Length: 324
Image 1 (cartoon, rainbow, N blue to C red):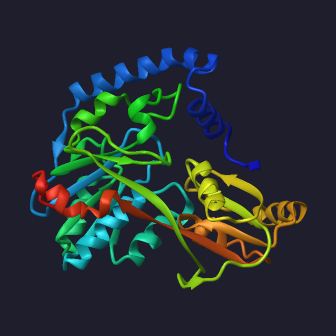
Image 2: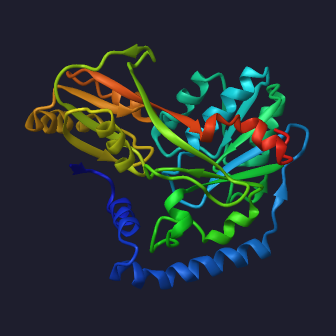
C-alpha cells in the first residue's frame, strides 16, 4: 500500500481505527473545546430555513467523509427523476480542481448539480432553472436549513460514536443527529442488521465494472492496481477483495484528489514494481484517473445502494412525513 494522502488525513484514519489510543485520548480535550465552540456558534447564529417553494431534502452525516452520502444522493435523485421530477443537487463545491468526479457522476444520473457556497443563492438558481426538487449534499451542519434533513451513520458508529475532530473523524457528537428528521444506517459488517427504531438501513454493494464511457466491461486479466481518492479507501479495497480480484497493490489519494501530471510517472512506476496489469478505481475517482492517461487498462468498480429488504426509500421517507 502506498498512502499518498496528506498527513492529516492519514492521522485521522489512524485515530478512527484506534479510538482508544493515547493520541486519540490526548486530542479529545481540543475535541471537547471544538464541540463547545460549535454549540455556542449555533446559539449565536440560529438556523435560517430555505424557502419552501421547492421541496428540499438535505443529506448529511457526522463524519468528514466516507459514509456513502454521494451514492445516497444519486440513488434518491434517480428515483425522483424516474417519477418525473426535475432534481437539482445543491453542493458547496468539491475541493478538486474542476469539481472532481461527483458532478459528472450525478449529472450522468439526470441530476443538475449546482455548486455554490451560498446555499440560498444555490436554491434560487435551482428554482430559476426549473427544478421541482432540491437535494442538499452535506447538509447536517449547514446553517441554511432545508425543509427536511436525513443523516447517515455507519452501523459501527451506533455502537461507538467516533471522536470529534481533531481526536477522530466526527464533525460533531452524536447529539447532532437530533437535528435530523430520519436516520439512514450504512451497514458495513457482514451480519449488520437492526438499528434505532424508525431508521432505514442500506449497503453499498459492489456491482459491475465500467469503462470511462460508462459501459459495462469484462474483468481484465491479471493483477489489479487499486487507485482511490476517497475518505475511507479501506472500504473500496474490501469491495475489490470481495469480488475476488487478484490485487497487486493499492495507491491511496485524498478525497476529492486533484491529480497532477507528475503523479502519472509515480503511479506507473509503482504499478510496475507491483506487477500490476490493469488499474481499478472507484466510480467516484474515474474521471480524475482517466486524466492521467495510463498505459495500463483503466476500469472503475461501480457500487450501488441496496436498501434493506428492497424497501423503496422515497416511500419510506414519505410515510414519515418527509414529502420530498
